[in-house]
Length: 428
Image (cartoon, rainbow, N blue to C red; front, side, top):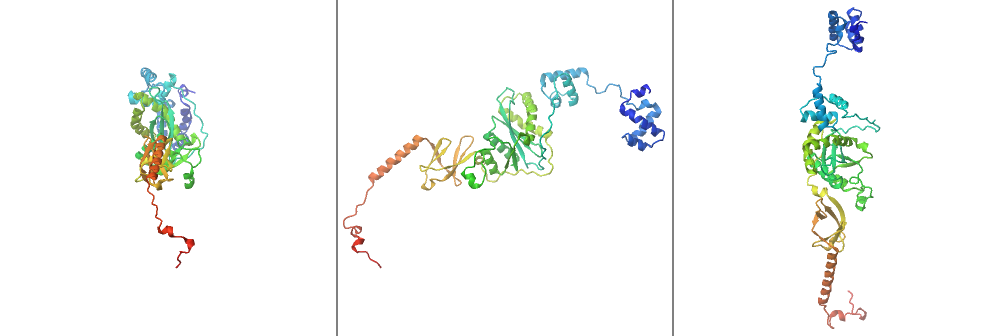
């Protein structure tokens, strides 16, 4: 075999006999193109090359030559220096984005991956195999939204540890998120209220069995009479605005939001670091500009057109929905008990005794009582105040009893003369 044939690749060596057969008219050019998976035009081009330059002409002309766009050693060392200084814990894809965005250096993620691997900066990890059954996405935007919280050191010791409450639409991967001090009833209600006011009320919300979302207690009397299951304050608020709560049985069941948190714990942590953010308020302000960019890159169109987010119900008072709400009974002394606190009803009426009153406490600490959709005027009192009031009422009753004037009928009063046993009854 000639030296020029030895330098050919396996693909070129496989094509050469077929092209020779086409040149010798043993097969047609159409058949040759079909056999070597090329177009007829390309086969004719190769035949012309071999006729003028021999078998060596089939070899690509750039074989053995340096690429005109090859990254120089000097530039590669400069990029590695920047990566080690600023982006040492970034992945290749994210680092390539930041190099172009902040350093005005354009480099492919695969080339950067090679440089970072060779420089012992980044090591690819093993991917875990999928062991859970795949679930098809919902078809419409707003049909189901997954919600969860992620407790993480988002500020990397520059500030307090925070919880990120995140929402992701199951059909489009559209993300909404906000930072809070912890994951609980307040953060869940406040974040869902902000989401609903901005985008509308989703048809259903997919959450885990965190104590803020799902309770293990038995239904109380009011819930049993209505035929409802035991609800937390958050699930009760969802039902009042018309959202169905769906509870996941495993983290993998809501894997879309879990994977989003994995991305955020990689990318968002570094973005907060680059922006120099150290407080929860500035972090939430940063999210207002960061999330639109994130959604532009990672969201996708739904399978079917249509927005299943519903507007908030008309006439609804959101302050009376997103609050702590329970029912209490008015006592004989016209008092209500709420979380070791006692409230007295001002200007009560006798009909209020033993009535069921709805007590609402806002997250600012304001207490409101409503009886049959009417707000009751209440005042917080102590047990000493109640004892003092009871003592005063007893003293007033005794005083009234002493000052009461009793009428003593005279001896000749008609009722004294009446005696049914003396036969003075008259029958018609």
